[in-house]
Amino acid sequence: MSQPEHGGQVYAFARKQSVSMPDAFHQVLDFSASINPIQPNIDWQSIQKTTQFAVRHYPDTHQVALKNALSKRFKLPSNHITLTNGISSAIVQLFSQIKPDTTLLFSPIYSEYERAADIYSNHTVKVQYDELEKAFSTQDASTFDLSAINQLTDQSVVVLVNPSTPKGDYYSPSSLEPLLKILKEKNCWIWVDESFLPFIGWDMQFSLRGQLKHHSKMVILQSLTKYYACPGVRIGALFSSPKALENFVWPSWPLSVLDEQFMLQALQEPLHNKATQTFFKQERPRFIESLKKCAVIQSVKDTKTNFVFVITKIKAVYLTDALKMMNILIRDCQSFGLGENTCRIAIRSTEDNQKLIHALHSNAYLLELTLPSRDLK
Image 1: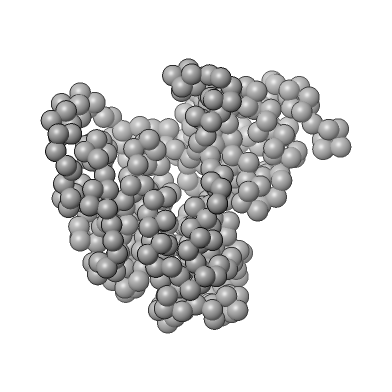
Image 2: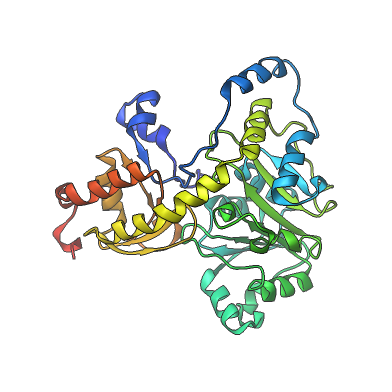
C-alpha cells in the first residue's frame, strides 16, 4: 500500500528542486506541517556531553526519568504511560496487535489511521464529525449513525482526533459524554488522539485523561513533537489504565538516548509554555485577519490550535503549486475528502507569516499564470 499523503515534505521538495538540505532548511517556508514556531531552549552542549557516553550503552528499558517527567506534566501516574517512537509508529502497533473486527473513524482524520485500518481491520466505517455535532446539540448519542454503532464489538476500535485535523474542531470532555457512554456499553476500544490539545491547554479539564479510570479500554495518543517543535525527534506517548496495554508487545528500546535527553530538557524548560501561549494569543488573530484580506481566500476557520483551516476561491492545488514557485509549502486538504478548495496552513513565526501574506498579495500574477480563467471568481 502506498504511503499516505502528509505535510512537512521538505526533503521531497528539496530533491525535486535539486536543492541541498542545508539550503532547503533556510530557504523553504513550510506551512504544511503544524509545528510550534516557539522552540524550547535546549542546551545542546549538555545533551552532547551526556549522550557521548550514553550511546555506548543501551537506553533505559523502563524509561524511568522520562516517564517521571511526563507524569508531572500530564498529571498521570507513570504506570499509565507507554512511550513510543512517534505516534505514527504507535498507530501501526496498536492496529497490528488488536486487528479490529470493525474500526470506526471520525472523519476527516489523520491518514495514518486510515492506512492502518485498511491493513489490519476487517471492516472500516467512517462517520463525519457532523454526526458529533448533531449528538451534542441534543445531548443524545442515539442520533449517531446506529448502523455504524451496531457493528461494534468488544474487539472493535473507535478513533477520535480531538482537536481534529485539518479542521481543528475541539470537543470538551463533557460534550463527549454521550458518545463515551454508548461506547463503554459496547466494551470496544476507544482511541483519542490529543496531539494538538496542548495548544488549547494542559489542564485536565480540557482532556479525556481524567476518564481513563472509567474506561479500561481507552487509550489517549499524545504526540510530543508538535508542541515541542521537534518532529525530527520521533517520540510520542500513550496514556491508558495500567493494565490496558500490558499484553501488547512493545519494543524493548522505543527511544534513543538522544530522544530522551532532548525531551527531558523540553519538558522541564520553564518559559516554553508561557512563551507559546503568549505568542498564539497575539499572532493567531492577526494572522487570520491578514489571510482573510487576501484575494484568493474565501474564509478562514479559527481552530484555537497552531494551524488554520482555509477555504480558497480557487482550486487549492493551483494555490499550492503557485506558492511552491516561491519556496512556500501549504497543505492541500483534498486528500482529506474536504473538497478541492480547502487547505490547512500552519501558524509560523510572525516574520514567516508576513512573508506568506506578502506572497499572496504581491505575487498574485503568479497565481493567475497557473489558473484557467474559468477557475477565477
